[in-house]
Length: 129
Image (cartoon, rainbow, N blue to C red; front, top):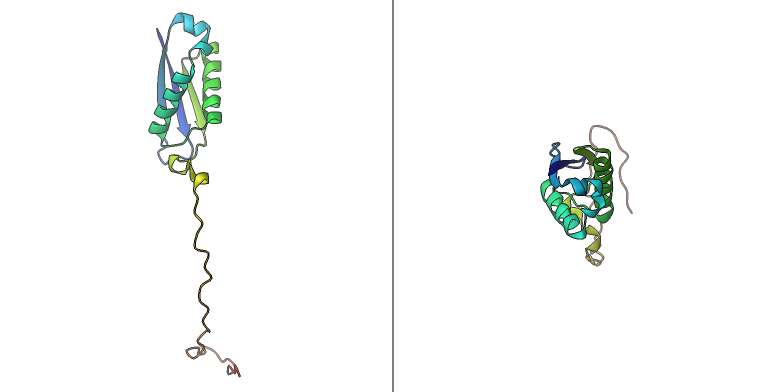
């Protein structure tokens, strides 16, 4: 078994250290790395990387990570480093917020000009009649 390591760095992370994900691959799987990344492993990778980075991984990001890693495995590289701009995990479902807001118009009140005085200069008298 050969160990392959993926290092992922998110530029939106406050912590600038990359997180790693290790994968042990047999010689047979090295020759056909596409067979390794089934849906179960993809979801395991997604949850582990999301937990380590505190960033959201959508399907496009995960596919980009896997394709880059597959390419490096085919070329014989044991480590793969990847830098992505991933959104924070707390903003993952922000588009699903349903808040109608407070749509009432606030009460209008006339302004009070009685306290207005010139400050450090001469102004003409204010006449609002």
